[in-house]
Length: 143
Length: 137
View 1: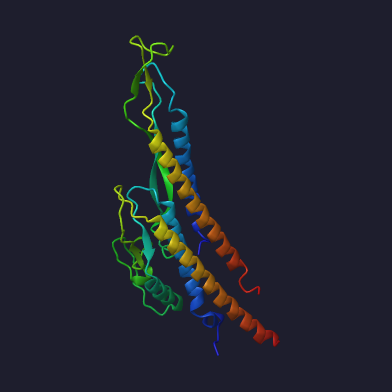
View 2: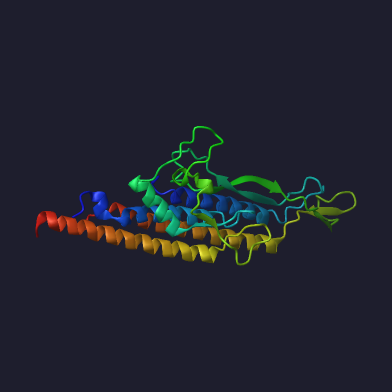
């Protein structure tokens, strides 16, 4: 037994969820970052999760699982078009008086945030339980 | 009277190993709860125990795999195609192809943890019994 791979797996889950939380924070923080040009406006970012397929040696096959852990394979920028707002008084406005706001869906981001934090807590719980089990195993035969 | 410590400990050592493996499996399911296309897996405990016990006694005859195309016997089965690993039947599969039900996995994880501790208790009492026999008090 490779001394509890559950730690690595739960750790990778926590790291992936915190990346998701980070992108959500970035999207929410930049929800009102307007720009005078539709192309250069902030694009909402979202992580892409991917299951890691463990490379198994023939000898270690019995111990391993087909999948082990999760990783963020990349972060994509949402192609959704920026929304144009008519604000002629804004110094950033273009010649027609429009500013462009990023296509951040605040409700969607909040849902993402809650989902990420729940999943993170799940992984923390897995890690805590694994630790307890491992400690109990270490105390085996001591009384 | 059992002659070796392995025999004395009996099925519990194997059970502990299989339980630890199941812990990893369910931890993996929970870590991938938001991964698109991920299929949740669990193990057939009875089959896993039988396989682990078979390997431990080493009584089985193994097929030699000398070429890449050879198919090994049950004992040398690859973990990815391991016969005791099953896919979960999803109750309500998500649109992105993910079949992890977080509540179900949490329940399975808790159950597995309790059973792991039960096995530990069995092992502990076995060792305590042995110690009493040695010390004589």
